[in-house]
Image 1: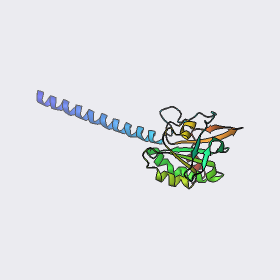
Image 2: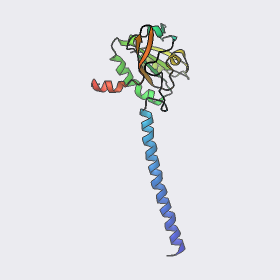
Image 3: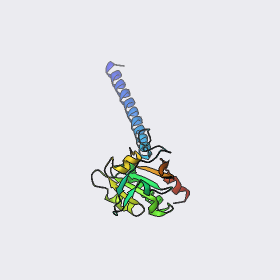
Image 4: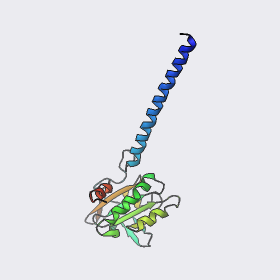
Length: 183
């Protein structure tokens, strides 16, 4: 073989190896993207206040003009935080609305917080307004601070111990509950 043929074969083999590696990397990136999109949590840390911790005090006004505070949260209330800038929030919103329709006590038992930076949360407010009391606030608003929310969506269930409101579940898996109910 001549040097030219040997070099051509070597470059071809390197090109084929490069293509195989690139395809493998692309496949892994797609897998990781899907996994990240399905995760309801942030980067390994809890997305909100820990289970058993006391919820901080907050006062806010719902979209209907009603005042709401920590004291207004009932036993087993569901508290959800969504952001219109969040892809997983957009994906999970319809199933959350369906779940919220099944919560005993109805909208009085569900508080939805739309954390809206750019003012584009109207769709979230409209959808959630059918099944929950809705508060719209900026990041680090009083409700988000009270629950120490750091990522979206965050879905919680609270309980009461005397006058204290405590987190009973900080990773509420409502999709599994819908699946069990056959919805």
